[in-house]
Length: 163
Image (tube, rainbow, N blue to C red; front, side, top):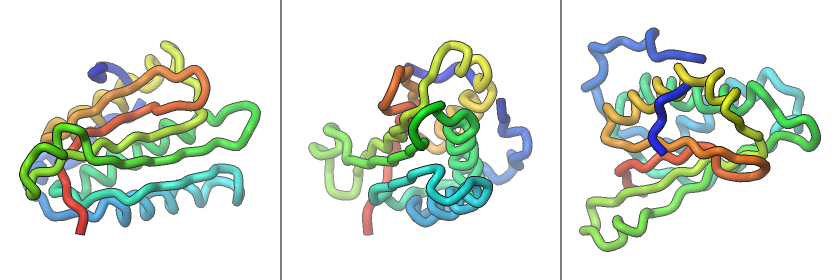
């Protein structure tokens, strides 16, 4: 389902930098952004696991903003019972396995025990739309899924490679 909804925007990003792409190690960038956010929580309050993520050609500032936004939306409203968890999984897409070696497409899924609703989507409409705009500029796709309990909240399909 394409995103048309979200609270944060990409207004702080410099539109002149959209074409300044470099090879970004997504694992390093995700861990850097996650450490920044986790500093606000008590140790053990949030359980985070991240699979190996590919290298991605993109604008580091924009992708940093994307990770900050996604992480903030997940951590902003933790579940009432158990500890909040975030598991970021990555797998090569089925179409990519049929493609030549240099052209790989990956699906990154943000799995969490956060519960979403139409109200949650309304609260995050601008942030979700900003994420979609960033990813579209980078040739990637973004999906938001409704979850009632444990499940995938966000999916990002993007071209990349592993070292």
